[in-house]
Image (cartoon, rainbow, N blue to C red; front, side):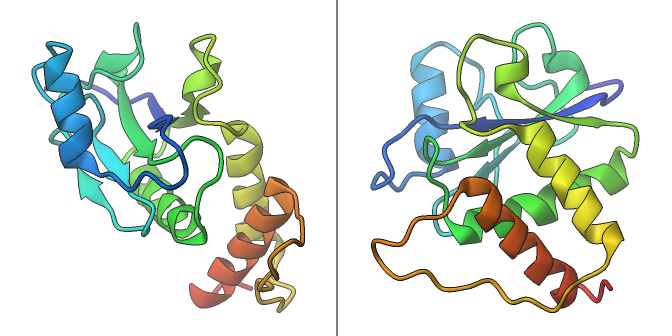
Amino acid sequence: MRQRTDRIIVHCSDTPPGMNIGAAEIREWHLERDFIDIGYHWVIPRDGSLEQGRPADTVGAHTFGYNSTSVGVCLVGRDQFTEAQWITLHHLVSSLRETYPDAEVCGHNEFSHKACPGFNVKDWWGEDERTRTSGYDGAVPEVRQQGQRETLRDRVRQVLRYLVRLLGGK
C-alpha cells in the first residue's frame, strides 16, 4: 500500500494512433515483462473511457524511483491523443488533485530520457489551472476540417475552455 502520494505522473503507451488498446492489453505486456500487474493505476484508451489499472492505493510500476509516492496515468497513443482522451485526462487529474491536493502533476519525461507522454505536462496542467481560474470566454472548441493544422497547445486550450463552461466555471 502506498503511504503517501506526492506526484501524479502522466505517461503514454507509445503505440501508433490506430492501435486501440486498453488496460487489459497493457497488463498482458507488463506481465510478459515479469511485472506483478499492470504498472499504471489508470489507463485512458482512444475513446476517452477510463480504465482501472492497479488498485489506486497500491504502489505502481511506472516511473523508476518514484513508484512508491506517485499515481501513474497512461494515455493510449504516442503524441496524437483524441479530444475524448484530453477531456478524461482533465477530469481524472482534477479528481486526483482533490484526493491528493499536494500532489505535483508531472510527465514521465521529467524523470527519464523518454519523450513520454509526448507533450509537456507542466505546461498543459499550468494552462489548465489558469483556464479554470481566469474566467471562461464563451468559446466552444472548433471542429477542424481535415487538412487544417493546429498546435497541441491551441487544441488543449479550446478543450479546457469548453470544459470550464460545462462544469459551470466563469
